[in-house]
Structure formats: C-alpha cells, structure tokens
Length: 463
Image 1 (cartoon, rainbow, N blue to C red):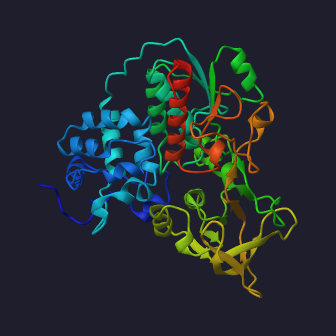
Image 2 (tube, helix red, strand yellow):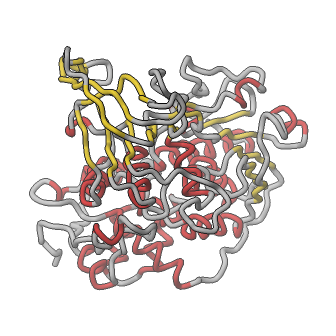
Image 3 (spheres, one colour):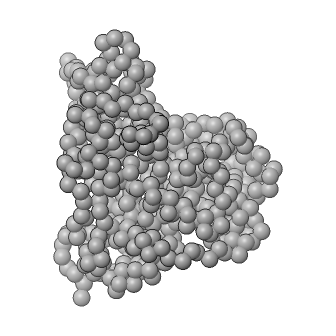
C-alpha cells in the first residue's frame, strides 16, 4: 500500500546559525529509512504525469518503484540512462517547477520528493564505489564539445555511450563549468561534480582543460583537425551591469567574479592564493538563485549585514523558494520593491553605500510580471562597503566573433533550430550559450537533444 502521508519526509539539514558560518553542505540527504518511506508515497500513476516535467525524460516512476523496493542500484541504472549528472541534478534542479509540479500527490498535499530521492540513489551509488563503467566500442566518429558545463557534459555523455570519440575543451583549469565556478560548495560539493566527471571519463570522454576556444583554438581548427561535429556549450559567462554611477568603485563585484573566486578558487580558505573582500556590510542586487548564492557566501565570509535588493515583490522573486527560505533563515535581509540608482563613495575610490528608490508594481510587462514603477521622492541610502551585481549574464562573444557563419541574436545567444543545429554546417549549440542564463537541467536537456541530432547526422540515420 502507498504511504498516503500528505507531507514529504523533511530533508535533514544543518541548523541555520551553524551553517551560515561554514561552507559545508546545508542539506544532509535522506537516510535509507527516509528514502524508503518517501518512495512509498509514489502512486505509480498509469499516465506518469511527472515525466512530462523532466527536461531529460527520466523514467521517474520506474526509479522510484525500485527505490521503494530497496533496489537502489537498479534505480540508479534507470536514472543514468537519461541523466549524466544524477547527483548534481538531485541537488540543484528546480523540481518544484518541473517534475514535482505535475505529481498527483501535490493536488491535496505535497508532491513526492523526486529530487531528494534522485540525490539519495546517486549518493548511494557513488558511496558504494561500484565497478567502473565498461567503455563502449568506438564507432570511428570524432566530436568536439566546447565547455564542460551541464550542456557539454550531457552531450558528451550521450555521444560517448553511442561509441563516439568525444573530446571536451574547457577554458578553465577544472572541468564542470558553472557547476564548479558558480554554485557554492554548501549547495553542491565539488567532490560530487568531480565524481560525475570521472564517470564520463570512464565512458571514454577526454577532457582538455585550459583551452580557450576562439583563442587557443578556433572552431575552424577543430574541424580541420578531424572533428566531424562541434557542440558549443560555452555557457553565459559575461556579467551584466546596471550602468548606474559608481559601478567602477573598489568593492563592486559581478556575482560571476565573486562566486568564481569563492567556489573555484576557494578564496574562503585561509591558505587560498585568490583574494576576496570580506566586507562588513554587503548588498547583492538581484533576486535569482545567483543572488541568493552570493548573499549566502558573503554571510559565510563574516559579513554582519547582507542585503538582497530587488525591484519587485517576494512573489516575483525568480529564485527557488527553498533558496529564499534558506537565505532568510541564515539572516539575509530582503529589501524588496527597491531599486539602486547609484553606488556611493566617500573617498571617490571605494564603496561607502548605495542610493536606492522605493518601487511599486504596475501592470504586467513583456515578462508577464508586474512592471516596477519608481515612487517619486522615495530616495534613501544604505551604508555599505561591498556591492555585488547579480542581475544576469550573457553568452561570451568570443566564439561567435571567431567563427564564420554562426548567426546570433541581439542578446548574443547562438541561433539554433529545434535539433540544436546552428547556421554553420556541422556545428551545434545548446544551454546558456543559446538561451542566456537558465537552469542546469534545461542546459542538460539541450545537450542531449543536440547529441541525438549529431548522432543522426553522423550515423546516416534519418531526422
């Protein structure tokens, strides 16, 4: 009989006043007993509505059924047929707006904790140190993948399983893309990412780090060197700014730089060679997951006051509800319906504060969210010594400016068709390089779609 409890099994986690002073993982994961109990909440619906919300088409009811029966390795096998990064996705995917959104149990209670179960199964597999994957027989075709973030790794993994000789080219010194430079250790331990990358290497994927495509090599040179197809999954690493006065003062960071110093370069450690400002009072401008990550990192670095400044209300915050709740629990101060107009400096060099105006919400705009309108005469200042801009990123222009025949949008995204094909023959793209900053799982879905298209093209199968 299914467990008809209306609530999910709670996720064990560090206490807020403890975790906001360390970089260890916040969520501790289910025990076996909790996982079995949660899996038994699944009704194994005939029409499987949860699967329609998964961008990589995991057979969700099947893996949960195996989990409920204690067949954890079988559950992992089912997940890994569709996902190259199950331990990652179980932690950072917005399940509440994807698979869990369609769960029947959510109609009269809370949906099944699909993401929590995926994490449990993947962690259980990784901890067991199972035998290495058998490398598939090579089919004689070579494919280059640019970028080792979620879309690149998903594309590489799917192609490697089909026997392709895949080489991933990564600009940084560590593979993982945004998974290692963008998402903090307390949400996604880097050892988890490294383990997933090793799994791809076991399939035969080669990873070349410190290779900047467009500088070290061009797309044309990759094709000249025998790669029959190229997938561009270079992400969106170009930070956006507001273009308000004072953004050039010392103490102003893009969230991209701030998080890269902390996550990739471990600037929070005493022996790190990469400096990062450990400020007393910090404002993070923006309301997405990146803003929450930056604010929570600043708090862990010792800041006494950390503000989230966002021009809409809490209802419009784009960050995951769970991340907003965690930030509040950890003492982050939310200044909503507030918009910065200038960054202040008393000495003309370093940040001393931020000038803001209050906002109110009008009619919905093109994004279908209510448009923020400035309240006249509402200007006020907040005393600060650090400002972090977390208002989004755009695709890096390097590849498009060094590759002929590659059409891009006004915002710099690479133009692709429904199969991930670009306007350049033999070149495919997906993830944030196409859409701008989005979620890990959507990037993975794009990588998988492009891999299928590349396979059809190179194997001679019909579209």
